Image (cartoon, rainbow, N blue to C red; front, side):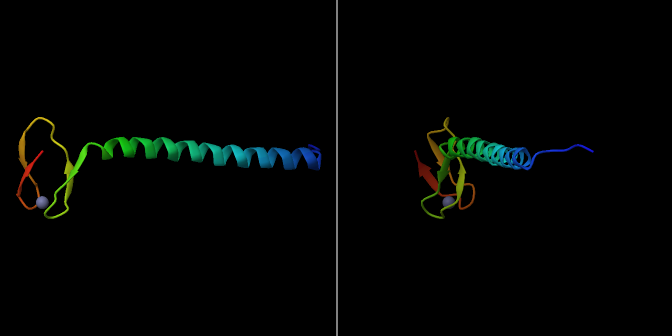
Amino acid sequence: MIKIDINIAISVFLSLSILLVFTVWLFYNYKRSSILSEINELEQCPYCAHIFPKDKDSELKNCPQCKSYLSS
Ligand SMILES: [Zn+2]
């Protein structure tokens, strides 16, 4: 049987817990920054409030939901 000092056991447990929380924090921050960069490429219709991806090429476009013409 392996004998472990109680101080080492507690420090290993706390270190692993902190490492897990830090890993989860990094994961969600990375995911949130990618979501925020995608938000810059979205556009909201002023008439029906529908959110759709922005089309950079066309000057005149219409909302995919209510078919209203939108100016860029
Ligand atoms: Zn609309």
